[in-house]
Image (cartoon, rainbow, N blue to C red):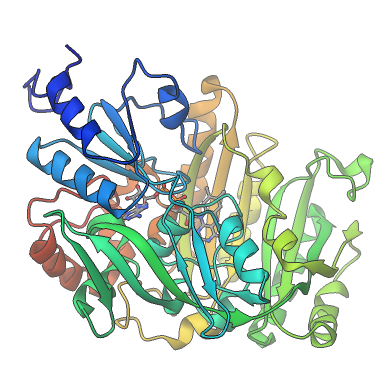
Length: 472
Ligand SMILES: Cc1cc2nc3c(=O)[nH]c(=O)nc-3n(C[C@H](O)[C@H](O)[C@H](O)COP(=O)(O)OP(=O)(O)OC[C@H]3O[C@@H](n4cnc5c(N)ncnc54)[C@H](O)[C@@H]3O)c2cc1C
């Protein structure tokens, strides 16, 4: 008998082969348990710190499979983990002992170029979305690492190179199909189940399992002015102050982010700089090429860069530019703050942290947002942090478990040092698993409404393996 244990309840042998056989007979996809080939591969996610063993993994092929999974988890009171792209740092896509609902095989992206809309399944990655939309010269704003899942990114908010021009990913979401906690498939939009639609635009996986996202698309590409400017780190204080001035005056089309780290051995960085601290400006212009050249010029005129690879690049390629540095399989821990402005105090605290980098893959990312993202009212969607113009993420990344304490300790110290200069809020998609106490900070004044909607749609908190909003 292949028994499933219900963690935390003290009860065992709740499910046997008969239950699993019945579930298997009701789905189109596969049901894997520990003895099946592919089980270990299926339970792996991006962050190698997370090593959990679900009692069963249901690899769904459509909404009908998702309905079965939700009903099964509810009937057997099993923890239910939902996996889209498997990138979330907190690792809630996989659980110990419960049911993992793996959506990664549901990857279709259907574009209608005449209505400029796309319907996307929840297993699609950003690369899948970019390839299909760019075939028609269209984009939806997403994030900066193309192997990220569209599902988790959208449900938390979503921002990247084209957000200042076209808004957050959720600002371009027109509707969703979603399986609620009672196993019903519903459609939600501004006009149908509008509360639910408000809540899923930032509220994460708290309200149900999304089986389809409908997005509005915008014309862009196939080439964009984009690229990197790599500077010696000893110039960082002056450069960051100039950067702050330039981005404040930049048009919404122009996005420029900073990355501070040890230089990776990339071919366009001179070899003598490999492994030394650098400050990198990464920029992208979401508009006509000639205007992009002009808008990038003041950034390219800053200091004396070690490398300048700004120029025309295919949008699809630029979206994947950071992929080689963000591959799955490393140990990762993040700390993040929103900033209304990049004050001198914030810059000093960041630079002090950079002086003690614990490893060659650790970095600090500062994203400049605002633009169209800031024009949406904080209570128009569940994502409330519309007035924060910078989002800092401390990406701590290393290989050996023996380095855990040093790397996590460095990130926490840097987070504490920068906190007094920050807005007090945080992006829900950047929160590690030990930050459950920051969920209310992530939602601010929108939290009570989210808790009330949660109570209506998921009173028993079936969807709790996430940055959890408790039923109010
Ligand atoms: C290297 C890297 C770069 C990143 N860059 C950016 C960036 O530029 N911009 C940005 O906004 N974010 C970025 N992120 C954060 C990213 O948005 C989150 O990690 C997001 O949760 C990833 O979604 P996923 O589907 O891959 O993750 P998963 O781990 O599969 O899912 C995350 C959570 O979302 C929920 N969920 C997933 N699918 C569904 C569904 N269909 N229905 C209901 N709930 C679901 C579940 O609660 C799940 O635990 C980045 C992450 C990484 C690792």
